[in-house]
Length: 329
Image (tube, rainbow, N blue to C red; front, side):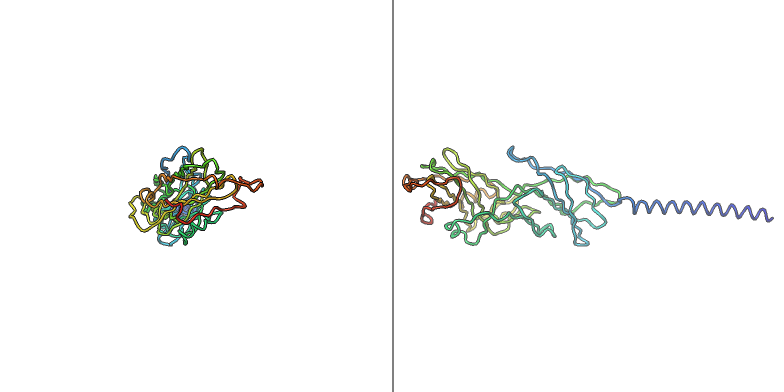
């Protein structure tokens, strides 16, 4: 009887040991999944870039993806290649995504804590606005033209379960537009040695999530190229102020001014100022700006000083006075 009892106890103990081992293995496996493996939702992100002119890079060098969490009010930054990559949404409640290229040199980003308030602006220009242009646009900051800027916004991320991976293609939009600017000379172009320009009344900022440009203008300062017959420049811009991305802009009491400063062969500086409000009203998101009738008269470029003139930079300027509005067309 004792022997039978002992055998029963041994069998029970072995059974309990087997059950305990199974439970232990189950617990360890759960622990291994919880602690050792990333069990949060992921996304395999790919970017669809807009077509660009052959003069521009096909796409930027790098991309920042901001993933926003509604529950905590926090966001995480992810740095991806322009082709995309794998993104982990973490343990929070990922709700929305904001994307922009991070290879810009002349653009600064602000208010990134919220995707719908985040905006970009360009850096301050490295020279001052002329006095005549300042009188026409007294409250505008002088900025450098922006770099090429791209962005995308996903308001609601599709639900992604644990251990799941979401295929997430994203269409990228271009937030910067291009103006080709032409200053056509009627006479005296050959007397110009240097040229630089300005375009006033343009958008100071752009919202990243939808490309809208809030009201408030800026003056963009840029260098120009010389050809045999004219002076020209390619100017990047956020467009006109108050423009909803993809919509139409209503005509308002807004002035857009195109300016040109030229250095003549005698070292003097001459300025031309043009009202291009009508041209910008028809081209709020890029296009061609053309002004004509510019002249350098013979007596303006003559020199009897007997001194050599440095025509390779803008130092030691002697300006030719013109009445404000006298060169406005």
